Amino acid sequence: MKRKAIIVWLLGMILILVTCIAIPKKTLKTVELEETIPFSAIDSPIRIGFSMDTLLEERWLRDRDLFKEAVEALGAEIEIVAANGDDALQISQAEALIQSGIDLLVIVPHNAEATAAIVHKAHLADIQVIAYDRLVKNADLDLYVSFDNEQVGEMQAKAITALVPKGNYVFIGGAITDNNAHLLKKGVFNVLRPYIERGDIKIVYDQWTKDWTPVNAQANMEEALRTTNKQIDAVIAANDATAGGVIQALAAVGLAGQVPVAGQDADLAGVQRIVTGTQTMTVYKPIKMLTQEMAKLAVAMAKGEKVSAEQKVNNGKIEVPSVLLTPIAVNEHNLDSTVIFDGFHSFKDVYQVTSK
Image (cartoon, rainbow, N blue to C red):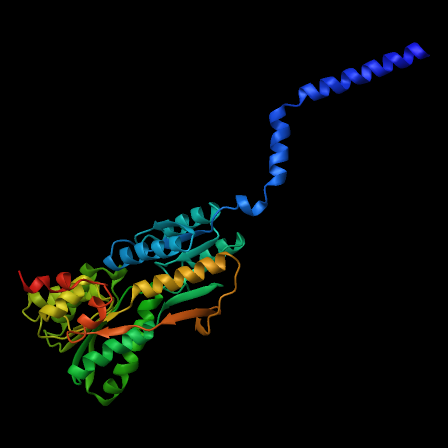
């Protein structure tokens, strides 16, 4: 019995020795190290996805750069994609952002209706969505941050009716797929309606501009000139890019500078035309203010913090919590104290056209 006990003891010691040799020292250290590191120390930074309609216009290049700068200043990361007016591409790009594990999605929709699918897909992945400057329609959108676009239209119409209280008006709208274009038009006609009802103003041409492009706006204006035999007293264009197309058409028939034209966005070309007298006014929407506010809200929401938005905008499905900033009407008299004073454009860039 004694001999048998000794053999059992020896077998047990051999088993223990083999087990210790089989476990690499590196593995033991790794386990111990992972147990001593707090989880917060290995957290990754907040990641914001930014799905943009286009980067083919000056204005959106500014938005991209300023928003990126503002997000990174808050310690977060940002991934930016642009579809350049392609609805299917914007949806697939947004899906790729969602699948990459972003913490929150910010979207500038090309098509207000089509991008509702993006919101739905993001929510399935437990990702909140903020609409940037343009509303997404018929979706359970989490937040909308923009300027008061109805007020933009009102500012345009007030500026032009102050100069031309009676006459034939042309309205060159933006893209029919963009909700902002509809809000802008609503604001314009809020002001024009009493003039129209009195018979002081007659709308002789009213057309949307596909994709907001100057070439399409120019074609619309050429048609307006043709169908009215050039009997046009004022034009309200949806933005400075479309205003540029309008002015090209007016210049071709010798009417540039004679017919007042309103735009918006305070693009460099637009404010230069104000200086030379071919464009009457624009509406300045301080983009730096917009991007900083958006970055602050986006990063807070991505961290799980609650944000307050007292305003609501109906998108056809819900009353979307909204933050709407105030735009500024700009003409030749306040260019220096607005877009130049803010550093949006330099004095040299705005006035260089007069010194050539």
